[in-house]
Length: 192
Image 1 (tube, one colour):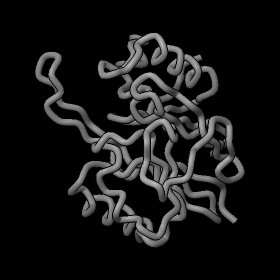
Image 2: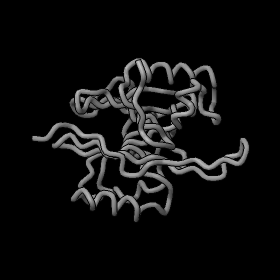
Image 3: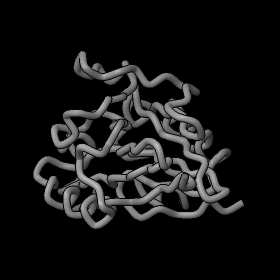
Image 4: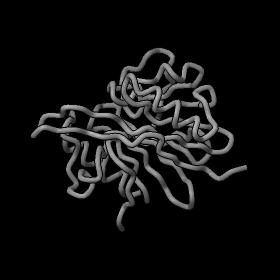
């Protein structure tokens, strides 16, 4: 049996021109518990080749993924969902997911050491996945904290339904996380 691992398969990015977002590509993360494999967000439509190559480099194929968790249902985070047709899908019901999705409930354990955390603000149903791995607590947060710059300035995502709620979600994440995997950039350590 292996220890749980958190592996970024594709680091997300965001391209801005002033305050206008010109392009955004989400981070795609693999959580491997040894017995179950979880993909958190699937990237933008057309990035399936990148994901296939990244999985293949780890001896995996899309058919090896047990669960897909979408932090929210914006296209840059769920564009390659169809690659994982055999997986069980999760999203918050406030995202109005398709009928084949299961509801991700705040505090519910998906598998031992991996649980859902409700982090609304970017969207009403934004959620994060909290993972115990390597003696650390990882928070895979989608756009609840899109970039390290949002963390450093404690600025909620520019696109949000409620900036106050988004900031509360950021605080909730940062209280428990040692490492944050943001929606649009490289993972970073939380400074205590």
